[in-house]
Image 1 (tube, helix red, strand yellow):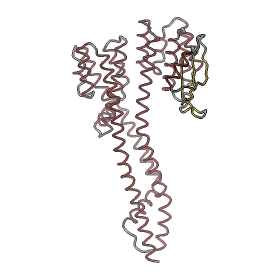
Image 2 (image 1 turned 30 degrees about the horizontal axis):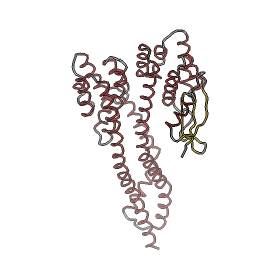
Image 3 (image 1 turned 60 degrees about the vertical axis):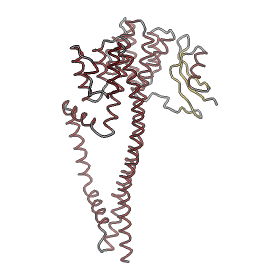
Image 4 (image 1 turned 45 degrees about the horizontal axis):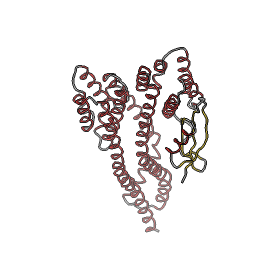
Length: 398
């Protein structure tokens, strides 16, 4: 059974064209396009004429991934750098990225290196991309490095998407249940409370508790909302202090389930970036510094900075990272240092922890979902029982 794919590709003249192709699989579609002397930039499965994903680039991060893959494809096809930048800027749909590429192309046209031109936009591209492209230009293997970088960004995006999708269902369940409870407590229960007051008599304890909570929320919800907003603002202000943020991130690592997920996510991201930099000739201290910039957890990042200091004094990296990375990653790094294959085994550590993270997410979500069902089911059940007891008490007095 064939599947239709929509594609954007560069031809041998360097022109970017769009079209559709039917093939048995995505890899077969790529082979078909290459057989037509077309070099794919984007390819996406479509169903009933509608792309399954979002054909238009919706965010800066996605746009950077697509631009890197586009550049890698065109450079591998033999298109020169300036022309590739021209085509990619014309096809870019994210305004911020498009403006940056146009400025980079102008700098390259004046004789500035690609890495130096990108360094002006370091906040957009990040240290990893700039360092790798600089290494690729120095070694004369820019197309190959671009391909490696595109693969790295795609795998990082896939890991992030896997984490988001795993947490989406519990978050959606919590939101919908909370919304339903708020509507019930603020609109349904007050009307029932008015009926109960008219009927008179003594209500069951559960009904009194429910109507009391409802009356408090209805009367004081602006204050409750204000306290909540003030609490969030105060926490953000407290968390903006580097020392406090580091303590908060350390606390998050000690949380059950979530702490282990965050640690493994940070370990996978750090070791993959570190491996990619080492494999392209980046010195170990520079690779550590750039890889540390990609670690969002400040506590782990601080420990990596301590490890950098120890490595600069001649100590072993695996020993310095003890207590920061999971034991399996440390073992692989230790073997890599002993055998001179630190880059290869760092990549293997990243792949191992990405697989472990996927497994842990499945197990964790399998535990979180029934826990949420029990918690919210208990709350909804209490509300339902309180309402039923109140109604039965009214009927008993009629």
